[in-house]
Length: 164
Picture 1 (cartoon, one colour):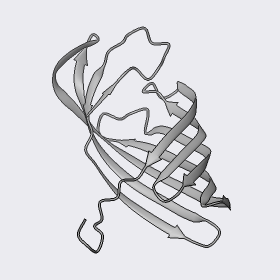
Picture 2 (cartoon, rainbow, N blue to C red):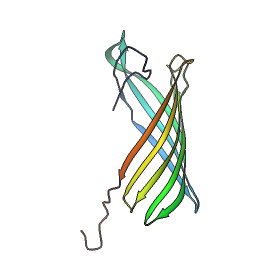
Picture 3 (cartoon, rainbow, N blue to C red):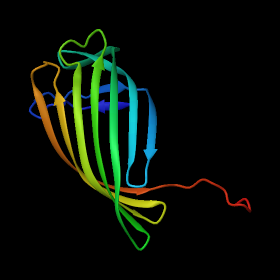
Picture 4 (tube, one colour):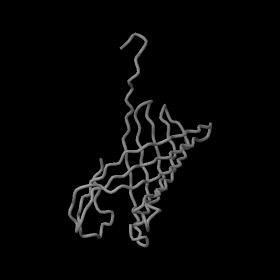
């Protein structure tokens, strides 16, 4: 479930349009000694709450969205059990459905950042995301510049040999 604000920050209307978005994806990882390539194809079924005159109404509109992301991870160096790497990715979003007329191309996201993996289960990522998005008019575009900082902890649910 996603509740989207208007995409355009200049839009004076603050209609929050609920969206149900089940999805399926396929991930492929190819790892080499110098870098790893991660690819993802994701298919989203998007159910948008209907609205009229900037008021929510009953029912949902339906559309598909296809996403393809390619990411390259390059290890840079290792200092005392701490891996430092470079992450580069690009993701393209394509809309589909009978109501999609002007904006088949939805958006493109380009990312570059550094990752620091401390031990096996804890990491920090910092980077820059350029988000280029076409609006429903078909000729208006938004450009977002986003700084990203993430703390990552991987839970380990595996059992040891003694059952604990």
